[in-house]
Image (cartoon, rainbow, N blue to C red):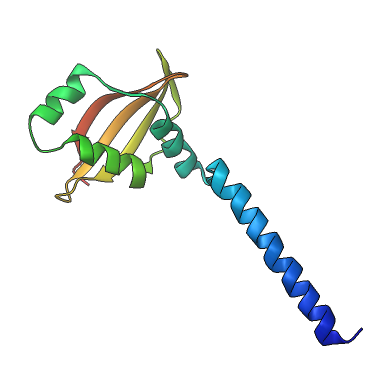
Length: 126
């Protein structure tokens, strides 16, 4: 068998294989979170999210809203030096990010086994 024929068979099999693999991965909702920062943020986003009274009062002040909190949970940075501390109800994580108005913000979130609770929202001096 000539090289071109073998190469054609290889390409046909390769394309069919890519098709089946892409179909399997798209149906399962697979995401790749290899780095610790993205794994923590993904875990916080997947759980039911609750706000403490102190966080609700910061949102009521108007300088931050719930969309900003969701955005920070998508794109924020977890400060692991101050995070992963055992507290009542789970582990405390400190997430730094920016609001839509480019205000630096620090979120303190307790990651429990069944829910995540936003404890405190602070403006950061940066």
